[in-house]
Length: 80
Image (cartoon, rainbow, N blue to C red; front, side, top):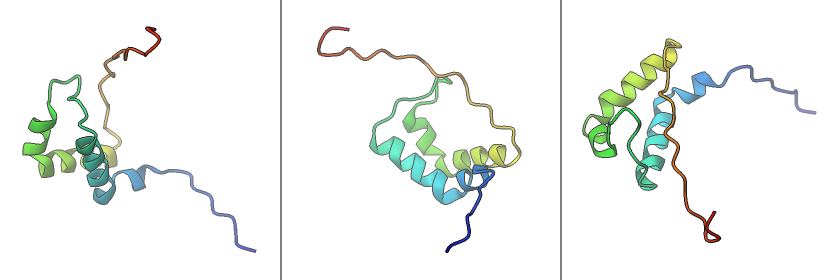
């Protein structure tokens, strides 16, 4: 029988550069919109290395505070 593994925190997995890069590629592939901070996908991509390093640093230091999300309603086929 395999011993049970317990994971108490996932933050160290999140801020691994491979995972940040993969997340960036998913946003880019999905043609995600820019953030509420006014930074477009194109602007973010121009300095991708610096931007991902900064996000990583803030996550490691437990100082990353995302801005509130911008609500966007998507019209449904039934009109709601």
